[in-house]
Amino acid sequence: MSKTVLEVKNLESFYGPIMAIRGASLKVEKGQVVTVLGANGAGKSTLLKTISGIMDPEKGQVIFEGEEIQGKEPHSIVRRGIVHVPEGREVFPLLTVDENLSLGAYTRGDKAEIEKDREMVFEYFPILAERRGQEAGTLSGGQQQMLAIGRGLMLRPKIMLLDEPSLGLSPLLVQEIFAILKRLNTDEGVTMMLVEQNAKVALDLADMGYVMEIGRIVMDGTADRLMESEDIKAFYLGHQEVGARGERRWKRKKTWR
Image (tube, rainbow, N blue to C red):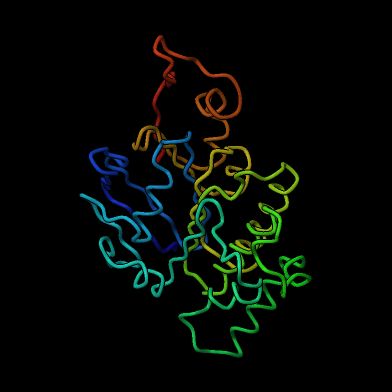
C-alpha cells in the first residue's frame, strides 16, 4: 500500500499583492516522481518555495508525513527530510565540491555514514569526484547542477524538490542528468517532486504529473496519460492555439483520478 509523503491542500500564496498560487492541491506518494509542468510564471517555483518554507502561504495546508508544516521555518523543514534543489543551482561558488557536499549533510552527525553517502554521490556523478577539490564556481553549468543534486542527496532526503534542473543546459546534459535522476529513484528509492518547463523529459521520468496555469492546477494524471493528452501535445510538445489577446487556450479541461 502506497504512503503519502507530501500533500498540498488548497494552497494560496502571494508575491506582495499578486496571488501566485490559487488553490493548488496535489499529492506525492513514497517512491514516486511527481512533476509539475507549466510555462514561465505559472507558479511552479512559488509552489516549491511555499512547501520548503521559504514563503508562507496565505491559506491552505502543506502536510508532510501526516503533519502540517506550512509556516514553519525552512531549517525545521529541512531537518524533517525535505530538500529543495533551487532553480539556478545556487552552489556555494567559493567553496570546493567537497565542502559543498559536506554542507548538504550539516544536520547529520553520523560521520561514517556521511562519507558513505559522499562516495555514493561520486558514483552517480564521477565528474564531481574528479573535481572534488575545485571551487564550485569554476564548474560548468551542468557540473554545478550535478553538485546541487549531490548536495541535496547528502541529507538522505525523504523527498527532493527539484526546480527546473534542465534550465540552461544542453540537450545532451539534460538527458544525462535526467537519466541519473531516474536511477536515483529506481535504485535508491528517492522520492522526487520536479517542476519543469521541459514536458518531454519530465514526463519520461515521472509517475504522475500536474499542469499549472496562472497559479492553478488545470490538469493532472499519470505521466503516460498526460503524454497522450492533446492539450499537453499542443501546449508543451508542439503547436498551440492562441487567443485574440495572445493567451493560450485549453481545448478542454480534464482531470484524471
